[in-house]
Image 1 (cartoon, helix red, strand yellow):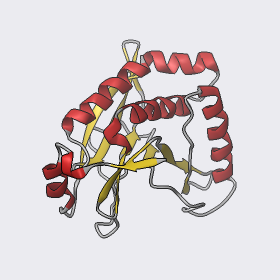
Image 2 (tube, rainbow, N blue to C red; image 1 turned 90 degrees about the vertical axis):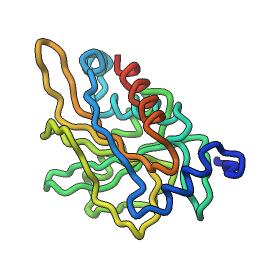
Image 3 (cartoon, rainbow, N blue to C red; image 1 turned 30 degrees about the vertical axis):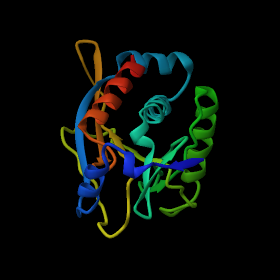
Image 4 (cartoon, one colour; image 1 turned 180 degrees about the horizontal axis):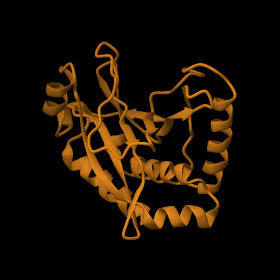
Length: 206
């Protein structure tokens, strides 16, 4: 479900119109995430670490309202819930775009995610189904401890979905960290909102 945002009475109306006209309206940041406790918790629960931090990402995304804003026909809509399309690697080193439906219940989410990963790994192709607009684009690069990040984008394709990516987990002095890249549409939110998201996500990981 979704409802239209009242643009005329939105305090970011001017910001929205200013940034949505740009060829590249997205901005991004990379932040280090302490995942020491989250990694241990995922092992304790018997849930894959990837599934665990994807779930925490979606909890944070669905809590911070601007991450649920999407642009449809030059109007801003607020979705009740947002899901994920994650890139899933196959044995032949190609990947496919998945669809992970969000659930507050970690066990239910873990089961659905496991089934979707198996589905992607047993078919070919990049686009394997229809994808709704109320999702985030999610990816993991567990081979690279990156400090900056960019995305391949078509400027003629209307896109307002946040893009969240994680890098290689490294350990130093018993503390595990990994980089998180967050790219969002500047017409829909500012650095303040990204700060809210990263702070909440870090708390959830603890």
